[in-house]
Amino acid sequence: MSSSSVQILATGAVTGSPAMFPAAVDTPDGLVVAYSTVPDGWPGGEVHVTRSDRTGETWSTPVVAAAAHAGEDAVLGALGMVRLANGALLLPVNAVTWNEGDGVAGRQIVLRLLRSDDGGATWTNDVPVAIDFAWPAVYGQILELGDELLWPVWGRQDAAERWRSALLSSTDGGLTWSLKATIGYDPDARLVGDYVESGNTDRGDADEIFDPEFRPHDPTDGFTETSVCALGDGRLFAILRQQGVGGDRTLAMFRSRSNDGGSSWSPYEPAGFSGMSPALHRLPDDSLLLATRRHVPVGSDAAPGVEVRIGPADGTSWSDVTLLEDPYGTVLTSEYQCGYPAIVPQDGGVRVFFYSYRPDEGRYIAWNQIAVETT
Image (cartoon, rainbow, N blue to C red):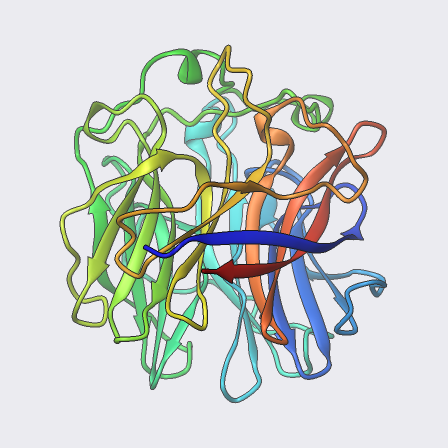
């Protein structure tokens, strides 16, 4: 592939702690960012939304877009927000209920798909989405392809299985959804080693979950967070996070392609690097921008952070990585202090939202404005 480099043009902050797992879109009236107030559906979590003009320098007082209903413990979001051709905003979230004593693996979740017809000022349709999927976790940008919406999810289609990456479809503007295809599934996935042993499978208290070293671990394993991108020739390309697929212990990313609009997918294969929380975006020259949380193995001297790389449409080779900048200059010390980038094209460039960490505050939403140069 041709040589590509990423230049960071500007940095800034959206909102203070607690804020993580952003979703973002650009609208004619400005930027809209949604975020979660707790990690992984811990009790009390809500999804908030804030707005800015197109500079991203100042932001409105956040509003609560979704909160737990009676009998639920939290609401959680991650990426996924989309602005449809008709101007409506759709925002996927999970409602989370904990089974006392069952730990992280015992969480129960349902899908909701919020809608805003006023640029993110107010949100409606806060009701469960009926889908034949036992444990559907939200992640990944919703795609609008003509009359069809495609919604990546991950989790357990059957209550007893390993995690899979899947794709939902709607042909009525998001009112009803059906399972279109599985992108990746390994029935024998199992992650072992330091990453598992250093994780926490119990329900922690508030002080624990906001500790910068805290990292939960759900022992289910398999394919998880998946970003799907529409290529210029009509194909679809996916990058998948996983735990223990094929016996992998390195948290390697995997890739897959679809030549038929997402109905079927090529056999998954390693993408050539490790990471978490992937976000894909097709650039004007049809190359791909990929942002991920960097995996920092136990004992590694690698710097934690969110990194971006450039690759061709087939995803077979990638540029050297560029580490995004914390706008406060914080030197991160833990892998889970940052992550979950959301990529927003804007005025011919790209703005990447992600969460980072301030030692005296906690996790907050940051952004980098970047330019991609190809020679």
